[in-house]
Image (cartoon, rainbow, N blue to C red):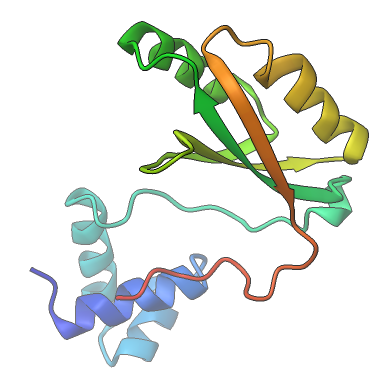
Length: 151
């Protein structure tokens, strides 16, 4: 179980994963060693699964974000495994979910431009033997940036 201090620690680290134990301790009202031990425990227990930097897509040449819904032709486990393997190899696909409802998968993708999105859909996804249908929605604007998890 997480106590209030653990929840606050997770919240602070989601805002800024580069916080030192000193800075984290100051924000939580703990000593640096106490904050460091709590962070290590939360890492060891799997609450913290990793650290990363947020990169500006435009600065690295990515201009088109889209959500792509994929409907499978078959729900055979081998077909699902093959599709999952394909998804894991494509750097444009930054996250993927399985869904209930009409679409089987929802993919979040970033491409340099519309021709890049077109290539991903028409040369990679649609030709896959287990894919029946693809529908995409191009993101016009992101109203709320990716946010930390509520803790």
